[in-house]
Amino acid sequence: MFKTPSNKVLPRQGDPRKFAQHGVVLEGYIAVSDLARVTEATESSGGEVQVKLEFKISEEKKKVVVGTAHAELSLICQRCLEPVTVPVQSDISLGIVWDEEGANKLPPHFEPWITGEGITDLYDMIEEELLLSLPAVAYHEEPCIDSKLYSSGKPVEVKREKNPFQVLEQLKSSPKP
Image 1 (tube, rainbow, N blue to C red):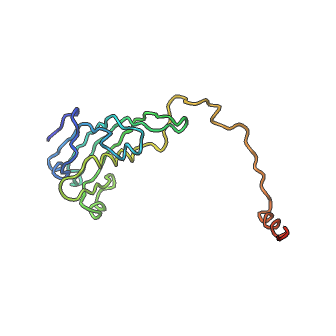
Image 2: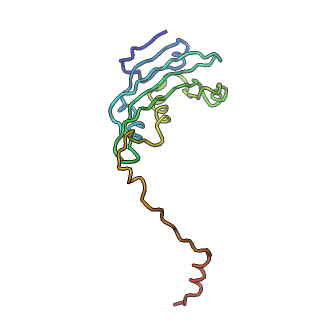
Image 3: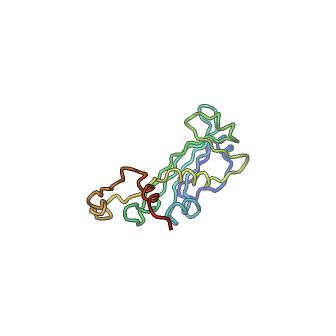
């Protein structure tokens, strides 16, 4: 089993099928700036994503990759609209397949990773997993705005017309120019 040191940059490309056959474990980091879609979806341009990937043959005799990707990413707080740092953790559990047909044959606990043949960009897969793990909304843990601003005060009653055609009736009875 081959293992990369965790304080090294994770290789960008590799052959996942060969990695699975040889039981390769990759540990390292990726600069957030190398993940264009993550930087577009967040306010992060610096920092690192810590990654551990274990390529192996599963009990069902499928080539798989399991592992984690963890980063501290900057998002916009939905209360104060200021940046907030949020831990994002992605648990990776993918079956390595050639095409949709292979994806349909995977056990349900593996998501398909359609790689085609040969060398694959590992950063794309990790980026996709991180994007799927982003929270729907982000907030500061501590109160970031005055709690009085959470509500606008008294509830406003909206008066509704009982007859929805009343407006049409008024238009019908108005004089024509």
